[in-house]
Image (cartoon, rainbow, N blue to C red; front, side, top):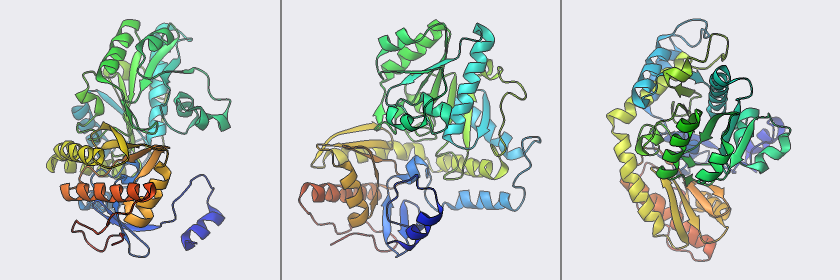
Length: 413
């Protein structure tokens, strides 16, 4: 047994189904384990490592801030927080930012803001949040109540009241659910944990019109799909609408814990001093790291790279025997298989072919590599994935490495 796994089993709560690999370092799109084996990372820490492992600009920014000022609490001003808020406002077209620690707490802030705005205008009963079947908004209780996956909720009932889910893509069902007691509609433009299922632009634009007509807010959970993941800074920017509130987190600081809830002025004004707070949200170190991430994306034109690599990865995956569909946008894609063998493919890809991906449904494998992944690495990812699928389906093509990378890949030959 992995010695780190043995130690972990004695002292860490057993809430994760981990793979038997201990990673010790990363470089760009590559990870290395304790035995020196190298893996091509096409998961990016669950769509987090946007600008690559070991990114020097991000590391230098965080280290410089660590040696200058780490924390003073939100009772005082710090420059990195204001710098980052200004950048996010400029990139998003929204007006105000509240910083938190991760996606779930950012969604909690969005839910509280929506309720505060709605109840202050329409009365105490206008607090309902309508979300979608198959959605995922986090593990805290309110975010879990908004999540449209009953299996994840079952252990923790009773959940907070005021949440309802309707089928995704069904405007009639949404119209029937949105009423006088509704504060907001909460959606992901791509249901990442629900299987990487993109919602159509027409449906999302229809939601925007419905919310406008009914006087309720539209919240976009961009925790997984934001910060360049779909080829634009925020996922809605290519879909023809603008939300009232949006949340981002995962990729914002390339692995350091930060989230941001953005809102228009008219909505953000509902929050008054004391309505919401956090100890660590928007601290100087994570904000400096996030600014470095935004600089990297801009200066290396990683939005364009994301779009180009998305087309390349999609075409490559579509050519793999056993793949019946590729869905998603940008570098948040799922390869849908012709059988419910995704878990086996993921284990085989990791153990035999040095490729890191994960199963989001029994028949779907998720790809969310760094936005900085190269064309050669993308081809190599497809080759390794094809080999893993073939092995699971009963054939074993050659898996010799075809891309030059630092160190020996974990492949067979």
